[in-house]
Length: 180
Figure: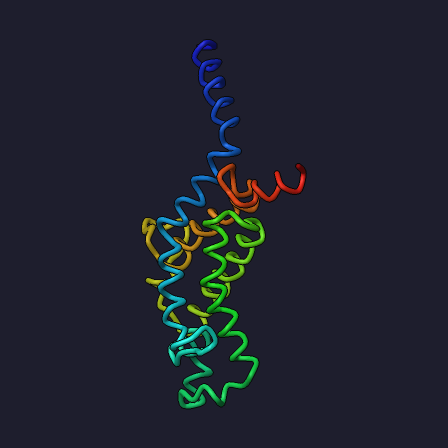
């Protein structure tokens, strides 16, 4: 029995050694393969012809109740709302790109946590999603869009904050350039 436990401990030690490069590399790859397209598709619905021209849908997505209250006239929402929508749209473009490139990864992952938190709060309080979409932790259903799926997204971001971008990243090149 001691030999089996020692063997398992040896395997665990080798896996731990490789975790510093494997976990962030896989987190970025999984983000690129699963979530980047989602964020970019969403971002494209927010622009209307140019990088600073916002669509009506952008305001409906980010300020749903306020936008309805002003009769879907984006001009009545004010400058602050326009800046928030523009920042949100560009965040959906730039933060995923930074994560994929592994450039300023920890900061980009932290930005994504904030973005997903605001997205989730907007879904719950702005779009008034139902309990089937909100879900609940520790139940038998694992596909609720907000509590279940977004918790897994957050785990990818926390991994990148804790471990960095990994060896195949612009962050590593920058680090070598600065120290070399």
